[in-house]
Length: 243
Image 1 (cartoon, rainbow, N blue to C red):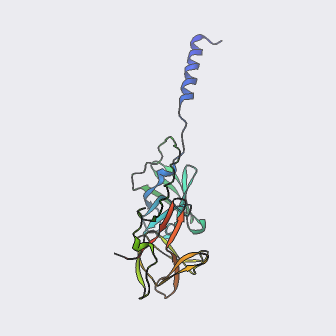
Image 2: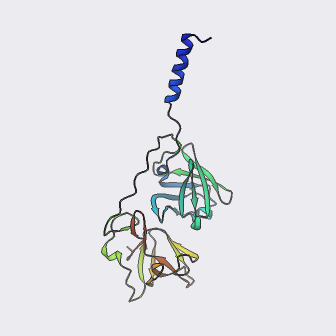
Image 3: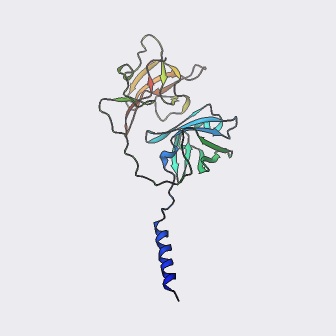
């Protein structure tokens, strides 16, 4: 038989239980920023997880990494953690929050840890808020991918190559493809800030502007993009000079 005291205690307990906020998943924006990668084959390196979409995917850029992590290209939220992918969505690593870091496994079976290098707080329950609206498109503005500012007029046009190769600078990690076709094999890449030579550029009927570049020291040639667009706007991915 329940006494009035027992009933009152039960009501109080139910009230407290119903008012407890449920645990929430880690928000994708919590992962944005720089991370120190530990557990690779040759020691620590770093990776930047961008919060800005490129072609509908979130960019991942590594610095001085070797092994599987050196092929990182994009990342995506996955449950309470994230996955890091290479080109053609090839799986590089799967990671989960654990005591303030991200821990997981590379595709070769080795363990890897990402430690926050930009003040990210991982593993702390938080209330998930509605995602922010993507940046509004800017009329008459083609942005620099590295700082989101409108590019200068001198960088909006293809580099002039009438007097030989032009030295330019990558504003984003760039794939070098074997042919002008965007579906052709990737034969190399330029890192953010890297200077390289553009020998010529051509407006193709299907793939837009493609620029021919040396691909390594073997004399092989490849092709890179100059522009790309997504739902947030229009961008340039290299500037027409190198300082």
